[in-house]
Length: 439
Image 1: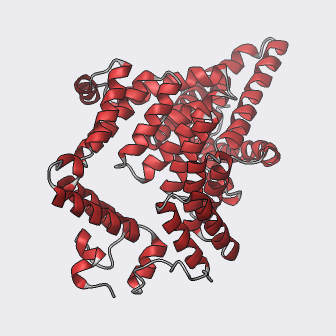
Image 2: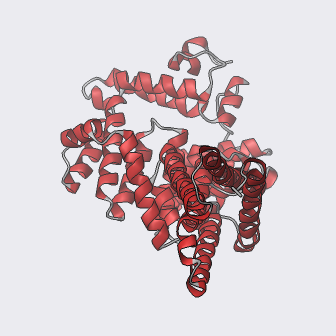
Image 3: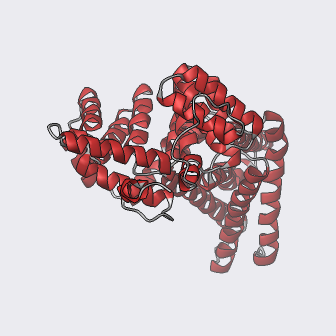
């Protein structure tokens, strides 16, 4: 075992069974005290920070930490040929630190050839490929890594970087958003998402991300990162102080969610194939859930009002509640079916996406219940409205499966009508049980 006085766990002041979250929190706490930006004239503090960084890099890497715990404090000797996947991996890490990136890439290739489920090797190879400019290779490695561990913030981070450099800016924002959900205290994630928002001319969103990044950079003692974020804010025409005030005195969350729902309603009705991915990439997971529920609420209200007041005559509380339950069951069953399909086909996205997509899909159905009876007296017009509604539902769900879930087009083409059919059947069953039209 390593000497006690030079033990990495002692450096970070954590127990040997500390989790990755504990190690990360301990490093950030100590970094605020010893960061070189906060101690420019103190060589001892800089040396301490270097030692903290060394311990952090080793203990946050599962492979290096396991070897360290086994007493293997050094890497693979230069005159020794690696025999196992961890040996190749360790030599690749050493070469990466020495900026021998192409040699490191060969070592990571060798490690993965011996062990195709080596998560850390995929992540390190993605990092190396990004440095070498192989963005297509980065995306491939991130996809493999996410198949092994579907909630890996580092994979989403490099996925976002590669997508942005390839010009897929909206996809990059979506990847950075998923990474932020897994690691909400990492300022670099907000900073990179702010750059992507700025590239799309989304100035308020970019300013919000830069401001958040600046706050975390300041908390962690990273003055250079803080200065970069503040410079970006200034270039956008926002001062850090005014942006901070806006973030504290902005609209209440309820009004913000209502605004997101109204904007999403208009955008989805105008363009069901392209807007939902854009909406999802701009929203945080909690905002996606709120917006999806808001869209479902609009659809449910329209269905209840249309079916109750315009089709079945005299209003009644029991009938209204039954109709509300019918519409709600369509939304909930569709969200559940989407989650199951995403898991079965190993698609991208999260449960927040399931709710947003389900709400967007049922929206035109609810509106149809409201306006459909008005067009029923003119058969050609009624047929046209019916076709428009069905096409909106199918296009919304199909584009979501291909763009957000990253499912193959053939798979999306089959499951899209199947999911809509299943959710409508669930609504019909609920209607049979709980709703009886007045005679």
